[in-house]
Amino acid sequence: METRLNLFEQGQKAVSTLFGISGYLKKATIESSLMELINFRISQINNCGYCLDMHSKEALAAGETTQRLFGLSVWREAPYYTKRERVALALAEAVNACDVPDEIYEIAKAEFTEQELIDLTLAVAAINAWNRLNITFVNTPGTYRVGQFG
Image 1 (cartoon, rainbow, N blue to C red):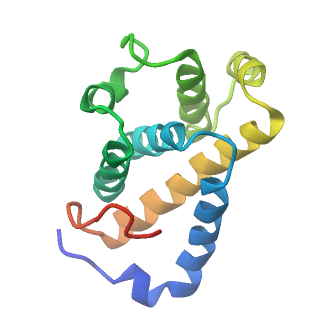
Image 2 (cartoon, one colour):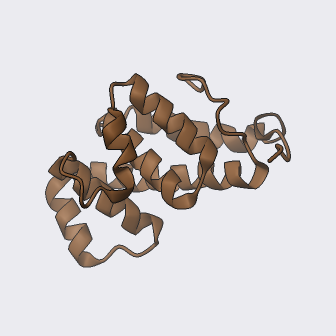
Protein backbone atom coordinates (compact mmCIF):
# COMPACT_ATOMS: atom_id res chain seq x y z
CA MET A 1 0.00 0.00 0.00
CA GLU A 2 1.00 3.57 -0.54
CA THR A 3 1.44 6.01 2.32
CA ARG A 4 -1.75 8.04 2.77
CA LEU A 5 -0.05 10.95 4.51
CA ASN A 6 3.31 11.55 6.09
CA LEU A 7 2.47 11.30 9.76
CA PHE A 8 5.85 12.64 10.85
CA GLU A 9 5.41 15.82 8.79
CA GLN A 10 1.67 16.42 9.05
CA GLY A 11 1.24 15.23 12.62
CA GLN A 12 4.38 16.53 14.34
CA LYS A 13 2.50 17.79 17.40
CA ALA A 14 0.61 14.55 17.83
CA VAL A 15 3.60 12.24 17.42
CA SER A 16 5.81 14.39 19.64
CA THR A 17 3.49 13.43 22.49
CA LEU A 18 3.97 9.74 21.71
CA PHE A 19 7.71 10.19 21.37
CA GLY A 20 7.61 11.68 24.88
CA ILE A 21 5.92 8.55 26.22
CA SER A 22 8.41 6.37 24.36
CA GLY A 23 11.27 8.38 25.86
CA TYR A 24 9.84 7.89 29.33
CA LEU A 25 9.51 4.13 28.75
CA LYS A 26 13.13 3.85 27.57
CA LYS A 27 14.15 5.07 31.03
CA ALA A 28 11.77 2.73 32.89
CA THR A 29 13.17 0.02 35.13
CA ILE A 30 11.74 -2.73 32.93
CA GLU A 31 14.48 -4.23 30.80
CA SER A 32 14.50 -3.00 27.21
CA SER A 33 14.55 -6.56 25.86
CA LEU A 34 11.21 -7.21 27.56
CA MET A 35 9.79 -3.95 26.23
CA GLU A 36 10.77 -5.01 22.69
CA LEU A 37 9.03 -8.37 23.16
CA ILE A 38 5.90 -6.56 24.32
CA ASN A 39 6.04 -4.12 21.41
CA PHE A 40 6.56 -6.95 18.93
CA ARG A 41 3.79 -9.16 20.36
CA ILE A 42 1.18 -6.42 20.50
CA SER A 43 2.11 -5.34 16.97
CA GLN A 44 1.57 -8.96 15.86
CA ILE A 45 -1.88 -9.01 17.41
CA ASN A 46 -2.75 -5.62 15.90
CA ASN A 47 -1.34 -6.53 12.46
CA CYS A 48 0.99 -3.54 12.22
CA GLY A 49 3.66 -4.32 9.65
CA TYR A 50 5.67 -1.16 10.23
CA CYS A 51 5.92 -1.73 13.98
CA LEU A 52 6.79 -5.41 13.47
CA ASP A 53 9.58 -4.34 11.13
CA MET A 54 10.83 -1.74 13.59
CA HIS A 55 10.71 -3.84 16.74
CA SER A 56 12.15 -6.95 15.13
CA LYS A 57 15.13 -4.91 13.94
CA GLU A 58 15.59 -3.22 17.31
CA ALA A 59 15.28 -6.53 19.19
CA LEU A 60 17.74 -8.34 16.92
CA ALA A 61 20.22 -5.44 17.14
CA ALA A 62 20.01 -5.67 20.94
CA GLY A 63 20.83 -9.38 20.88
CA GLU A 64 17.40 -11.04 20.74
CA THR A 65 17.32 -14.35 18.89
CA THR A 66 15.33 -15.09 15.77
CA GLN A 67 13.94 -18.21 17.44
CA ARG A 68 12.37 -16.18 20.24
CA LEU A 69 10.96 -13.59 17.83
CA PHE A 70 9.55 -16.22 15.47
CA GLY A 71 8.04 -18.10 18.42
CA LEU A 72 6.46 -15.10 20.07
CA SER A 73 2.99 -15.75 18.66
CA VAL A 74 3.03 -19.10 20.50
CA TRP A 75 4.88 -18.00 23.62
CA ARG A 76 2.65 -20.13 25.88
CA GLU A 77 3.94 -23.29 24.17
CA ALA A 78 7.56 -22.26 23.67
CA PRO A 79 10.05 -23.19 26.42
CA TYR A 80 12.48 -20.33 25.84
CA TYR A 81 10.73 -17.44 27.60
CA THR A 82 11.37 -16.67 31.25
CA LYS A 83 8.66 -16.57 33.88
CA ARG A 84 8.92 -12.77 33.97
CA GLU A 85 8.52 -12.57 30.19
CA ARG A 86 5.53 -14.94 30.25
CA VAL A 87 3.81 -12.90 32.94
CA ALA A 88 4.46 -9.67 31.06
CA LEU A 89 3.16 -11.15 27.81
CA ALA A 90 0.01 -12.43 29.51
CA LEU A 91 -0.60 -9.02 31.06
CA ALA A 92 0.15 -7.20 27.78
CA GLU A 93 -2.28 -9.36 25.84
CA ALA A 94 -4.97 -8.84 28.48
CA VAL A 95 -4.43 -5.07 28.51
CA ASN A 96 -4.50 -5.04 24.71
CA ALA A 97 -7.87 -6.84 24.80
CA CYS A 98 -9.13 -4.37 27.44
CA ASP A 99 -9.91 -7.32 29.70
CA VAL A 100 -7.54 -7.91 32.61
CA PRO A 101 -8.93 -10.69 34.80
CA ASP A 102 -8.03 -10.72 38.50
CA GLU A 103 -6.02 -13.92 37.99
CA ILE A 104 -3.68 -12.32 35.46
CA TYR A 105 -3.38 -9.12 37.50
CA GLU A 106 -2.51 -11.05 40.67
CA ILE A 107 0.18 -13.06 38.88
CA ALA A 108 1.59 -9.86 37.40
CA LYS A 109 1.47 -8.11 40.77
CA ALA A 110 3.58 -10.91 42.26
CA GLU A 111 6.22 -10.53 39.54
CA PHE A 112 6.37 -6.76 38.97
CA THR A 113 6.48 -3.70 41.20
CA GLU A 114 3.58 -1.28 41.12
CA GLN A 115 5.64 1.14 39.02
CA GLU A 116 6.53 -1.64 36.59
CA LEU A 117 2.85 -2.57 36.27
CA ILE A 118 2.07 1.03 35.40
CA ASP A 119 4.94 1.14 32.90
CA LEU A 120 3.92 -2.16 31.26
CA THR A 121 0.36 -0.92 30.89
CA LEU A 122 1.59 2.37 29.45
CA ALA A 123 3.84 0.45 27.04
CA VAL A 124 0.83 -1.45 25.70
CA ALA A 125 -1.15 1.77 25.37
CA ALA A 126 1.74 3.44 23.53
CA ILE A 127 2.34 0.63 21.05
CA ASN A 128 -1.39 0.50 20.42
CA ALA A 129 -1.36 4.19 19.52
CA TRP A 130 1.64 3.71 17.21
CA ASN A 131 0.02 0.64 15.62
CA ARG A 132 -3.17 2.50 14.91
CA LEU A 133 -1.41 5.52 13.46
CA ASN A 134 0.84 3.41 11.23
CA ILE A 135 -2.07 1.25 10.06
CA THR A 136 -4.32 4.23 9.33
CA PHE A 137 -1.79 6.33 7.45
CA VAL A 138 0.22 3.39 6.04
CA ASN A 139 3.81 3.72 7.10
CA THR A 140 5.55 1.23 4.77
CA PRO A 141 7.22 -1.77 6.46
CA GLY A 142 10.86 -2.39 5.59
CA THR A 143 11.99 1.22 5.69
CA TYR A 144 12.91 1.45 9.39
CA ARG A 145 16.59 1.69 10.38
CA VAL A 146 17.79 0.63 13.84
CA GLY A 147 17.92 3.65 16.14
CA GLN A 148 16.03 5.82 13.66
CA PHE A 149 13.89 7.41 16.37
CA GLY A 150 16.56 7.63 19.06
